[in-house]
Image 1 (cartoon, rainbow, N blue to C red):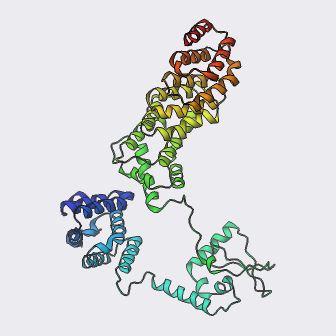
Image 2: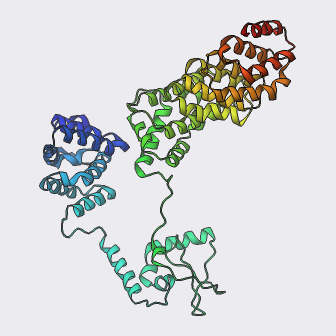
Image 3: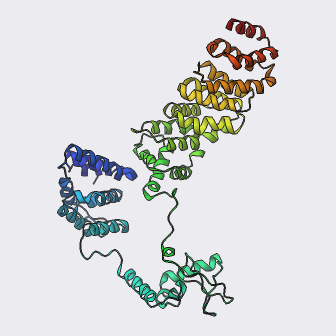
Length: 487
């Protein structure tokens, strides 16, 4: 049965909550927001109708047969929805009727075809609800844990991990042990030293093997593990949680597909930390995305209801555009210009930090990069970000291409601060000697003398006078005439 048909069984408010849970990797946080708004509008609201409807028996065809059976409605939804639903219920179960939750748990336990991770979530929800007799471990796993605890209890204070784990017949007879032994031989791993010969030496337990092999040569004594050593190492901050990993193929499809698709999965980007968004961009291969796909993908990013955070936007701009712009050897394509313009209009600070600044700072820009930057300056950047870019351009080593960027910025009639005027004066004195015959440099001076007359004073005026005296272009007369009008 189609999911849309199943949704018709629910009243309006519950349907809105279910639609949030069907949003894939972002379903749980979206459902929490919807539930919070519903509770704010009606403090007494509880989705008891939702739980009752999910527990209703629904006729359906048995898988692999043509017989008609009945199943709880919740078991007919896709497993991704069941995962989101159980995760959501674990977070809000104190606000929901306990009887309805227990009934829903019973429905899940009747479905023997549920994946193991759904079964685990059901067990965790039962434990949250205080259901007695809930066991999270299988009988075999329970027995192995008891055996291990027994060996530790009788180990005393001098025995090590390896002495408790080695020589265990039950462990060695497990099928997993044989498979791991074969894997170990194929990888030609070097065994760790054992402590059987001397009584004072011990071996370190390898993390990928249940039992370490003996070494006839022995080795130095390993320190006895402290209690804190037993705990697993924490995952790095940029490790992607499962919901983000699940979103990778969906986002990749959005990047590669021309068809109209729901782009709400991109909202998961705002749930990433700085390290996670870098890892996600690497998994998606955004740097290798073809230029033809950029305008469509950027349009889907801009269509999101909420703005992306600055760190996320900067990472996307860097991965999508920076390498392509730095490698330009010919004028930028329309697709590249369109993508850069759209992102720059919506996220100008991130674009200056992740794209325009690095192009001007890390290398001398070529004509192709300058053409793109000038287009963004003229059509996409707000005045405050033009000032930021002007500051970056002044600090670089000037050449003809960089002068084009400075000229384009000055043509927009910047509101120059005293700090920028001081920096401009310093750079004029330092670099003007290299541009006595440059037309770009002369045009820049003429723009300053005609559009920034109120700013030409003091040391800045003296620096301009020195530049005019050394000028050797045919604009020299026009420059001197404009300078005289200042007086």
